[in-house]
Length: 357
Image (cartoon, one colour):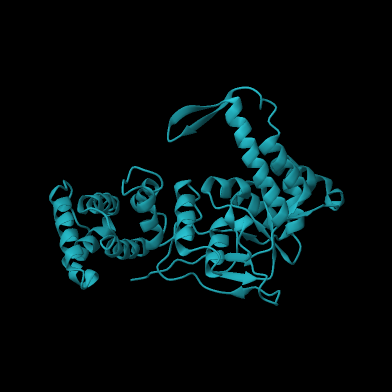
């Protein structure tokens, strides 16, 4: 069955001595849930390009907890506009209410919540934020922008209105032939590409290539990818190892972050169903080699089976997986027996057993 999804990829690599983009390929067994329409071609590449950081990227890596991509890894040489750093500094430590208690209102999955932050908590956070800014300044080149006033007034006004002055500065810098824009926002990427021909990368690919360079582990890379999917970053590619990491992060509880978001992808896929099925098969054989209790494994498998069964074209293939489970599990007879028992219990409880052509 087909086992790969392909989309455009561009990222920087200062270890090469060519400015040309070297075309590569998407590894087999990856599911790309929402192919990115903003990059031409059908493969991702590596070029000698300077990555410029969009402000939202800093928020992404801090939420995911992968600051090492910026602060420690030496795979890339990052740059940031002066306006972006100033805006970041103001956002992180310029709180006018730092001496009083305040809070944040969030709305997620239909639930509104309020998180209070005391003055002492704010003070502690500001200390940590200042440490982050100091480290960021030491590893990222802060670049002044002189050409913003030379832009067409209409273009400049549009970009500043939508992205802020610092965003317009970043895109102007990234428009250089030797530069690439690192942003996880597809709207920003589309605007930059259409107006200035800007090349783009995003957090997942930076993590991928940093892992290839051996500066983060594969486990760390899969954790980053799983977290991005858990935060609804739709243009994200994953494989069975990523799904296995999501199980670990959720303690094998399908209703927890980020595993619950993978379940939704399996339930309502936007891409090739056969690729998703292949990932499931590879995942289950790996899951039954992990040190989870049988009931924990079965809990995860049953939820994914439910999700896949909701896609009528996959039902016959799922039944064939059960019939041929010995082929998938090989010498792992204990894992096979546990899977077979789990599958049979799940199938017995189904109310809709209709199988399509």
